[in-house]
Length: 293
Image (cartoon, rainbow, N blue to C red):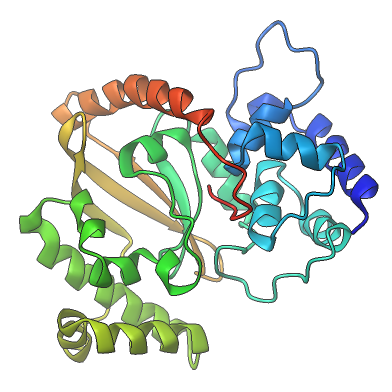
């Protein structure tokens, strides 16, 4: 691995990104033209120490997931992302989906502008690629898992803890929506091995999933009304909207509430307590090499 070239490239890209480009305040006392190291680390879901070692060329070998997270944090174009992988001597991601996917620039640009509402970008198999602070405060950080376990659909039918996000009486609705959406995605992808593995594994492990899959309901989830259970604010009623990438493999999700509603007031509170909790927990992030976002 060309450590010095990798370090120099990261520094050069960091200097190029303006704080406003990624939804951060510029502030009058900035001593660097672009982002600070700790800001890049925060955006990529890494510890500041880990990222600092990368920029210093100290023998850290980043994983593909970490590289993908850095490419998003630094807003790299396609050629720049590929160059980053080459410098780290990692094979380029061959699929247009999964946790190492390169986020669609158009969706990422929109996400940067959504600073007052929870928003995140996911794949069509419900793997979270990147979140803003309010999304992390609302639904929690994206899991460090890879493979099928990275998919919320997989966790929904195999891990009871995944359902704690919604009230129990809403679970049947979300189960039906997840399966109908997955059927639509399977049809769009055609004979796709990743979808086949996900569906096959869920049919074996979850009788509920198998029964819903055999019902053959189909429909992409473009919008939904949700009640989300927050540990501090209680149940928050929100509308969830989706904007699809051109090929349908990535989605920008954002949450909103009607002005003057209780949900809108709770979102305002979330912007305060959520930011405080995230700031307090930022120093606890390890350097996992797993590309947490």
